[in-house]
Image (cartoon, rainbow, N blue to C red; front, top):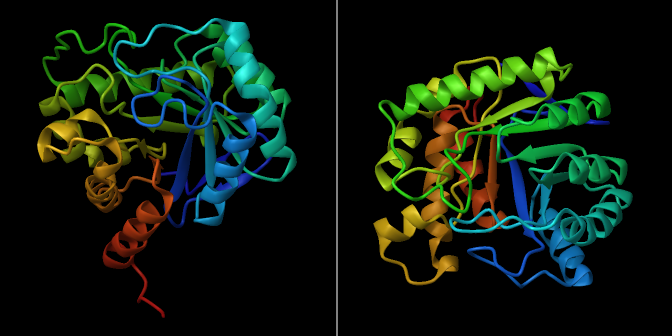
Length: 282
């Protein structure tokens, strides 16, 4: 597997787990919708996540929660670009969470390093945008669209089908000019999957991690954890998320996408100390 992640202007080493902090600039995201719609509050929260150990800040202006409807392109641009520009100018590593090629292109122009596309770079224009910018790319699996993806999702073999899709999209992206070292794969926990589908994928992350591409997992505060634990509030799922972070790292995952950065950073440190090859040093 590649031991670094090549982004637009950086090389991010993967000798330890990278933590991607979630910054939702939306009024309707499932966990923190409305908390950071004000740009100043969003920027302050991004700085706090980096201070707490986030390596990357993932900025999103369109909710992709189950049942969410698309946001007009202009509205997404208005939400995302000022924040991306300010964070990038301050030296933060910024990822843009978008399905729209024009939003991705504008964010990269504003200084973003990575495009995190929940639709898996299906759109040829998105592949072109990423390739021309030399950006990093997260290719995620999603069955259906956010508005309908949780309406009876079905698979014959969820692990094999997700794996095949991600490898095929990575191949298409490379053919479009995206560097192999720029690609990270994400199985899309919660995106068109039942609780059992999610658990099966988490049990078999090693299947994805055996390939040449690093793997990212985003389980943070997802509803399947709520179903398992019975927690009534999203923020009470951070401890459950930390368990999935540690188990994912034990299977070779390189990047985790989370809301609670300090807890995830601690979970990663413990997991790395247990599964790492080198003696632990105080």
